[in-house]
Amino acid sequence: MPAEPLSPQEVEERLATLPGWSLDAGRLTRSYRLGSHFAAAAMVVHVAQVQEELDHHSDLTLGYHTVALAVHTHSAGGAVTEKDVELARRVEDLAAGHGAH
Ligand SMILES: C[C@H](O)[C@H](O)[C@H]1CNC2=NC(N)=NC(=O)C2=N1
Image (cartoon, rainbow, N blue to C red; front, side):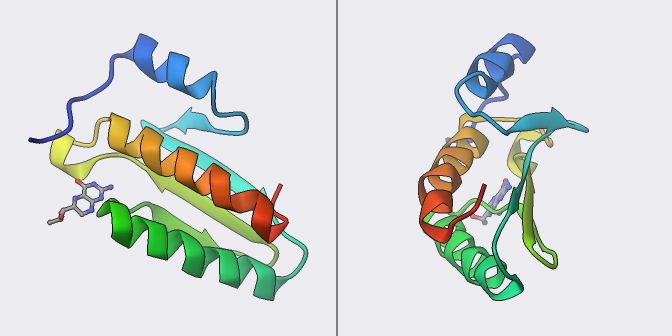
């Protein structure tokens, strides 16, 4: 069953439980800072593993000491859905282990 779009209020409620995440151009976004470029690259690989597991994929950008994500649900017409929130939570869970903040 396709994921349903969250209402603007539901998105705000979810964001209130995801510090550092925001809604930007209709997508859930967050940027993390890490201690080195290699540490950032390792986090990208870990996020990619989670995205494959969830079958849900963000635009994932590796910078010098940064990792940035932006995600919405293509199959819901580009809306934000619970799938995006689930991915954000999973990324939060692994970020600390990479020293990301
Ligand atoms: C066929 C495949 O499962 C789908 O296309 C998945 C893959 N990853 C996805 N990622 C995102 N962000 N939105 C989707 O609708 C989506 N769909």
